[in-house]
Image (cartoon, one colour):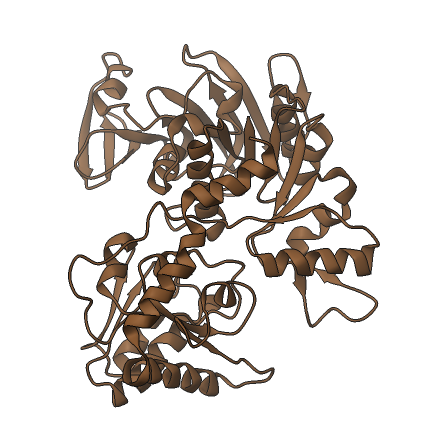
Length: 497
């Protein structure tokens, strides 16, 4: 069995979660059983909805808290009628507005706030009980009540003092008693004094042997508990980002990325490290040799894969550009929009589709308006990218740091040309400069306006000078190395499958 450990997951997940979903596909192709362990709380959404959305099967998902009960990972199927049946003969009235509702008890100011899975069904994710104007309890459901939170007033606010996680028969499987910075957990036969201890208990309960593999995708708050309790299992740490600070590194010292400092310090307890590109793997090896005096095993396995190359069924839209990412400041989607606005002056038929969601959406929408680009720049939100890429000719990235670049892989898998900065590690991995796209030099101290103009210049060059058919075929050649069977074979070599 292969166990992959992570913290959280969301609707707009990071590349780490998408990398895990691709890994799940590779393990299925190998016939290797795998589980993906998530250790965060998910009060706003059933974890199954989030994991299913990204591509995990229910039996592949382990949630830290429900692991100690007999509840399975499952979608919400608990109905309003089932909840109403628990209220015995009390009189009540239910009102609803979209995904939220209220159940008011007759002759009382007490009520329950109802939170439905969606607007079209009576499936309840959670119920919040309010008595005399005070929140006293929250119940959470899948196909039964999975856990409850209990509250008391403190300093004018509702204070969480207890969580109970239940078995299917309603008996208590686990209790959590948060108290400021500390948390106590109580199982049937023992008391644990931190979340790290709970993670350690989960790892011990797996009964790991030398036949098992543990992959750690995020170590914050859980890495030590995993390493201490993995036993005879082989342990791999997956590196998802740039692993060091170039500006903080000199001939004598290396400044590791904070997220990787602990697992790098524990290299003697780690069987292998996984990077997503050969360039990063070889760099990490050289740095360990130079700064640590050790040579750990570092393997390069792409964090994504392609089931097949995607060729368009109809002609691509001429002069069409697309970019896809979380709408976050570090992705520099604003540079992409500004570059396309500049390029549009030379290529009047140019269009840009921006796919993705995030905190920057409002600011980017305003930027489109400021540039007067509403006629050719569209912010499309979350998209099914397999349908989007084949309609476009060019993928444009403004990012200055990509550990791999799943969107880049998917773009070349659909035959798109690529333009992006010549920065580690993703762009040079997928861009064969001058053959399927262009790498834009990024000099230290280069101003933002210069970066935008440089991107715009390469966009114009592609549309007015390059051999688009040749670039398309070269992208397909690059993408062929990332077909799922090839990536799965690499995993097989590492885990011995």
